[in-house]
Each structure stands twice: as C-alpha cells, then as structure tokens.
Amino acid sequence: MASPQMVMYEEEFAQVQAVTDRLVQDANARVVFVVDKNGQLIAGSGDTADIDTTSLASLAAGNIAATGGIAQLLREQEFATQYHEGVRQNVHIQVVSGRVILVVIFDNRTSLGLVRLRVKRANEQLVRIFEMVMAKAQDPFQASPFAEITDDDIDNLFND
Amino acid sequence: MSFINYLSREINCKIVYYGPGLCGKTTNLQYIYNRTNPDAKGKMISLATETERTLFFDFLPLEIGEIRGFKTRFHLYTVPGQVFYDASRKLILKGVDGVVFVADSQMLRAEANTESMDNLRTNLAEQGYNLDALPYVIQYNKRDMPAVSPVEELREMLNTGNVPDFSAVATTGEGVFETLKSVAKLVLTELKRGAAR
Image 1 (cartoon, each protein chain N blue to C red):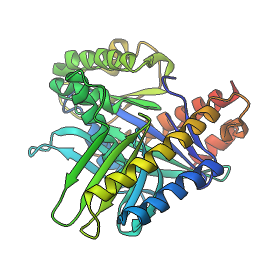
Image 2: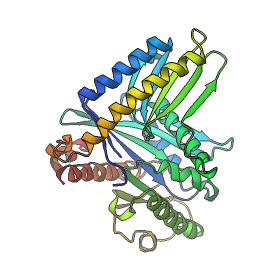
Image 3: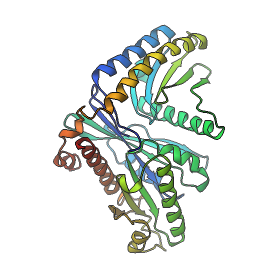
Image 4: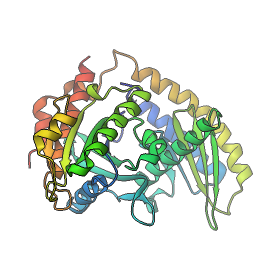
C-alpha cells in the first residue's frame, strides 16, 4: 500500500472535534470541516445541517489535489492556503501537515483576518493530533476492526 | 486508502473507474446512481465540460450496508478518459482502494484500451501502487455495439493478471452491479487481509 490506512479512534476524534468547535466560535465562522486529503470527511462543526458534507469533502480534496498539481508544475512545494471569495459566503482552505484539509466557511459576520488568525492556531493543534493518529495507525499492535471480519460477513453484505 | 472512524462506526473506501475516453465510466456511475435506494446514496457530482465530457471527475458516495456494526461506504470516482487529461487522472488515483478498468469492446477502440491500461499502470506506479497487488476488476463494456471484439480477445489483450472480468452494457445496466459488487468484495477482502498481517 502506498499510504497507510487512516483510523480515527474516539479519543483523537474528540480532540479534532474540540478544535473545530472552538474554531467556529473563535472565528465566528458558519461551518468548519476537517477533510482527509483523499476526500473523506473527518469532522465538522457549526451549521452543517444545510450542507452536503460528503460532496463538499470530495470537492475540497479535489481542489487541493488540483492546486497541488499546479504547485508541482511550478516546482513549488505546495499551496497550503486557499481563499475563495463569494458574494455572501467565503471559503478558507488550509492544508494541515500535508495530510488533512481544514475548511472554514464564513460570511460577513466576521473577517478574513480573524479567520486566518484563528485558523493558524487551530492548524498547530491539528498538526499535533494527526501526528498521533498516524502513529497509532502504523502501530502493529493496534487492532483493526477488519481483524475480526470473516469472509462470511463480506459475503452477507452482498446477498440480495 | 480506506478511512475507519470508530466514533461514527464508519468504513469508507475509494474505488476508481478507469478507462479510455467515451468507454462508459460515467454511464456506469449514472446507472448505479439511478438504481440505488435514495437512503443509500449521496448526491452524484460530475465535473464535466459543456459537452458532458468528464473534465476532472465524477463522484458518487454509496452505502452498501453494515459489517459488524460498521457502516460500509464506497466512494466511487471516475477519471477523465481523454488522453490529454493525464494530470487530473493521476490526482484521482491518490488513496485508491480498488480499481475498475472499463474497456470499450468496439474493435476500433482496441488500441485506446491498451493505451489506457498502460497509462493506469504507469500512473499507479507513480503513486507507489502496483496494479497487480491492488483489488481490481475489468469490465468489457458496450457489448451491444455492432463491431465488437470477442471477449476472449479482449481478455487476452487486457486481463493479463486473470482478475475477475465482466461483459457489460452500461446504458442498460447489464453487468454494472456485478462489476461493482466484485470490486467492492475484493477491497473488503484486501482490508481484512491487511488487518491480519
């Protein structure tokens, strides 16, 4: 496998959630998401109910992947920060640890400066958390939920 | 790269549909989307040109049921098939758990099929993957077209690894779910094998 599997346990998930909850408040943002670079949604806070979070995660990851491709062509390491300005809403996207993506959606109740400032702090906290997540995923003694799955379980999933 | 979330008890895997331009990758996803219970699917996203050619990718999240209390979701992606979109194709292969190679059965597309298969191998290798070590299946699509190569010939040309393969007519749905089920099963079996290592 080219990259190790990402496994989120409750402890780290709660920590990520605490960071995103706080970021929504501190930055006065509408929504905050943490998305895996492969497009899987990890955590979300704020006004998430009206947003198709699965699609958003996949598109944010596609966006980062495309920008990363441009960076490579320009021999730039990566464009870690992106900002999209809309009429009513804006999106701030930050790559964390080269591994996950922090997406902040905000409107005119706050400012880009404040969002940037708060994202910087959240970024530092997330870097530490995801270092732990990846260390755990590579720990051979950490049980995978797949260890207990039998061939029958897999077959049963596909029985119509 | 699959993603397992213990708190929400979810397993997410990524499957990529690969193949030459106009072979029916998007049509596969559209058929799956149209025939799936609304509770089990998310919105299908197509980043396409004005002429409905895939520009970046199509995306369809699909829930297939529970294994030992874990909701099992597959994220289906297609790549743009046209030769000059190679940079985009590479990006979409990142973190892939399983591949469906969709071949166009029409005789005139034989070269396009082999070119695309070579391109798949090269692009996977660039990401550190080996196609032969990855869960993958082949679909011989467009079996309803008038001038198609015999399946045996396509198999000899494309299925060197002797992986599961299926004849299909994606527009009517023939072979579409068989292909998906087969690759999904291979992905889960591989994850199980990985966990046992």
